[in-house]
Length: 243
Image (tube, rainbow, N blue to C red):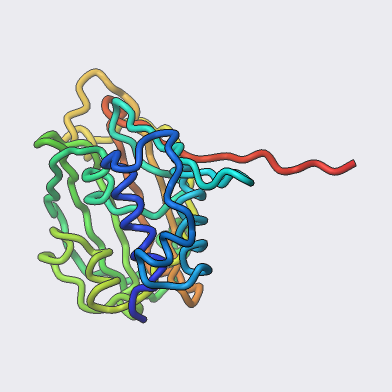
């Protein structure tokens, strides 16, 4: 399935906000102007704006318009509520990024993997360990498993660049939803070897199960983050209460 028009608009507006072309607390151009700019329907623009609101970049205000509420922060930030690649996060944080594949294998899910990941026993998987670096410093150890039947053709070269770009641009598959859990865990021997955590004895660990547009889980990932440079961002709204 090709990328949706609203997704293209969302990504363009997101970049413009991050670059501060649309500054913090400014009002975005009205929907009528965005419809002309992007040559699309009003509903398409609204979907893009709704997606920006979900990740805390904008807020719609009745009678005023859509206000920019995104602010850059000192630490590199990762969005819990959105699905963002490492490369996209690094670009938003204005940092240079690179990835090193330290393990690439094909495995079959057993009972232990089934209980931990949700992949059924017998599922053929790609198993990948990748070391993520920002400005040359190792910061994240990613442990990925992908269902080969849903995401075929992954290679070490693709893993070294961007698997999500491959999924969206080559396989034309929608990356729809990710369920995430964040914990703080003790440093392991693998963490010591790959991340060199120094005085830190714990890491921030984000575990995710990611689903495509058909509701099928195609990925399980555990991302192990050094706490030194990172914070995790989410956006919360208070539900309207009724008596």
